[in-house]
Amino acid sequence: MIRPGDSRPSRLLDAEDTTAAASGPLLAVCAGHRCAALRRLAGTAGTVDELGAAVRAAPGAVLITTDCLGRCEVAALAGIARHHGPSGQSGRTVWLAGAEQTDRAEALRRWVVDGGPSRLDRPDVDLPPSLAPAAIGLGPGIRITPSQQSL
Image (cartoon, rainbow, N blue to C red; front, side):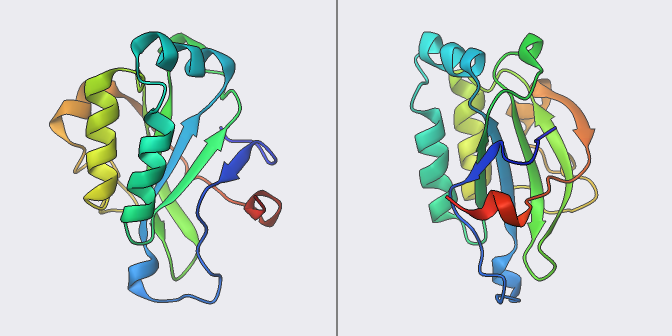
């Protein structure tokens, strides 16, 4: 679970923006010591930067990097949900393990560029087949509080 103060959004939506285009994927990536070390060891240390580039290319997308999420036993962790721009809420989150693996990191990047989850209630419905083995569960929507919106 992302705790207040732990996340650093890399791109935020204007609170006044109520267009459908403001909806998109909301991606949370663990940047804790172990997850970062796993990415370095796997040769995917630039994954977070690549995901940041994907977020900048995807309308309405938001990237949150966070300190340790406390699930070190599942390797590098990432969560993705559908962000609903008009309401500012996100749908349920599908959590992915092993995000340090080259094929999973690339599949996640492509999914973000392609628009990410299409449904708020079931982000796993259109999960790319290459990410299916990485899915470790569904959780509540990711919340971004006003204190988390400052860079």
